Length: 100
Image 1 (spheres, rainbow, N blue to C red):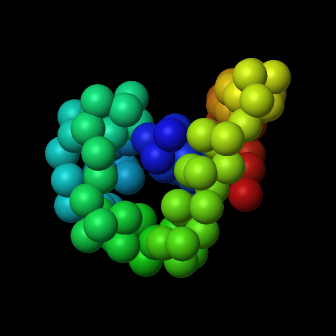
Image 2: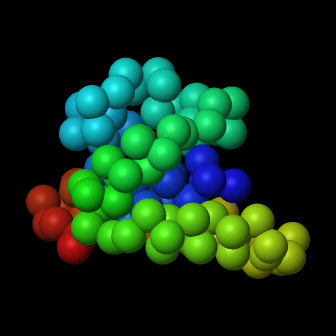
């Protein structure tokens, strides 16, 4: 679930995979594999996430753990929330507004 947590953090900050990968010093394809759960991030990479998003590594791990322990309905809610956030960001971008 760490990949899902990292994706949610990235989406919350309205960053693309490409922009995030550049900020973290990794290839966009590697970030994509992490977010899909195909690869695991290193502790060093988690530290870079923490610095970039101004949050402790422990918070990232806690968020990931909470997502893993969520019920099926909670996981569905998280998925839907992420899609709604993406939709709102797209609508705001088309209107020329920025969502903080």
